[in-house]
Image (cartoon, rainbow over all chains, first blue to last red; front, top):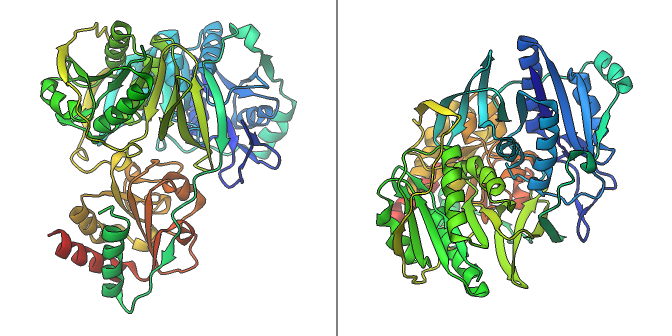
Length: 253
Length: 319
């Protein structure tokens, strides 16, 4: 079974973001694997452990993403591929998907798995777009996954509950929290990962898709409505003030 | 001609508020571009909502008769209507369903897509979409350069504005195609509750609620307000409530008008999920908790006293 796991490198949540004109200032940013993609890597490894085959970790970006690929190696990936883009149009999911779909096609992948969204853009687009580009099935928000032979059974989160769905390989999956508990890379794995090769592909190798997005500009978040702590003698006093504030001042209730 | 297509969403046979929100947003764009607004509704018996969408700006409503939601077939239906109507702007809900089928629509239409948009404006004949990025620590403005531009819009981010359109109904029957994924069974036991990601008011609990037996304290407040029940990661990881209630980085991103955080300290991962709420109320014993940095109204106090008092007070005024 050939399993492609998508690994997006994103700024750590605790990192301060300094906004530039059309991109953020990357100085001082600590980069991590987007948390949902860790579930994807773990699931890929479990699928390989059960079904055999190989896990190929793929990340798109400049050379700094190699660090995330080495972490995927340390967790147990068999191969790591950097789709090398330096001047990338951020958040152009169609461009990303086209590059990844063309790579997946060249590998004849059985399973493509990524996080349900990345925490820097919250778009929830790439994995399902890849499925569409390849003309294969997809299961979004998977919280369980069983593959036996070519039969795929999964529980997915839907609004108000869950659904059990079935399909057959090849399939693209988006990993939701609950799918598994990602393993930690051990020291031996981390040391070995340093020496493993990282394959690189350029957009030219992958059909040279063009961007459909133009960045107009970035800006800091809008200022919050200034807050205040309420003062009252007891719970009833707080409650009266809150109800008044929410109804007469904020007019939200 | 720059026409706008919006795709509405239903739940349990009822029109969702997001459908009206994006119709109004579509109206604003169409007025600026000099075009028409077509609303698409998929389901059975959906003609009856044409008036509701006409009242908030839809010039016409295309209805497609279909059974339960399936991402693949719905993507085919929407792409079929896009092909037929040739809009230059398409607005879809950034909901659980929207995230499931919108990526396929974008690829089928050969369109660029910006997802999780909270602001829409027009500049130089093109839509500029604003979206929070990096967990709300920045906002980005983007244009789509392909002939069809698709945007998925975050619930509660657009105002519903009454503006009469014709709302003329037209039935269509684009090809649904076959789905490769079959739905075997559904457990929608939480389906009648107010949905977290689209709720306009959320009452949320954290470690401070002390145990699963205390949710009724918050649920009583949520019930009187018609609010959804949310939770912090701490409460979910403790096993006090299912993950589907989790707000935050590894839970749901929410933008309600009012977020009432009870016994939630406000870790940065939680703020990432609710920081764009319009008004934030924080009730916490620890006056130094980070949640107070984002709270519009802060109450330093015991939630087990303040929340019931608040429920009683709302009962009085809301009856």
